[in-house]
Length: 231
Image 1 (cartoon, rainbow, N blue to C red):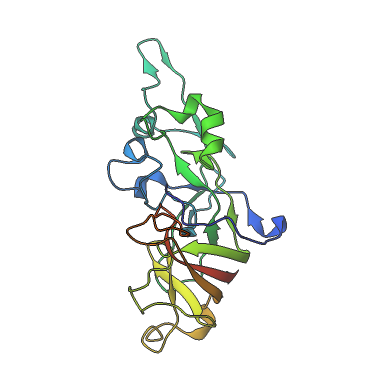
Image 2: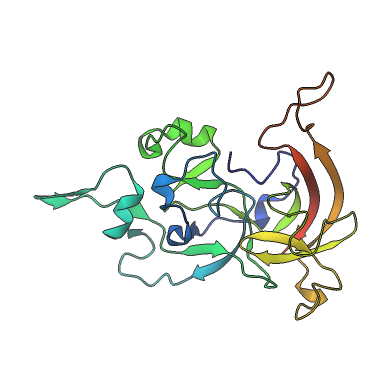
């Protein structure tokens, strides 16, 4: 699953921004049409994001329609010899935050076009909700402040400044991930660029399981971090 966020979290809904959709042009691997829920990419939840387009003055303000190229994000083209039925999309966009910047926040849902079988989620809203996802072009909720739990995919244990420990401050490491703020990271990165602090750490699952009394490895196995986020 493309989930970097774990279930434990505490936040106020007033700290959630519901204005922006993921800029799917930044998704690799053939775009959202080719990315299944099991693939971790920048369309996952738990990704630090910044605003790339805040212009609401477009022709179709405040809602736009997908361009000809964006039709490829769905399972079929909406063009025909007699007309076109374009799909509405949110023109306000976000993308993974760069290194050292203060991001808007962290995504609370993943953005998908297809399920694990390659079937379009456009026509299966129940499955979309089960996957805790929004469709390409739909608004994805972004949390700016609160307590969250993330996997080591969101806060890598090696790159770029080593594993984070309780009490470490964290910054944006680029690509939508966290990194701890250390002496090595401080080169060109000031302390006021900290976006949170590690409150607790843990480890889930046992490698090469199953072991009696243990949890067999799954997509959430490994080190996890409880972070007090304040973007």
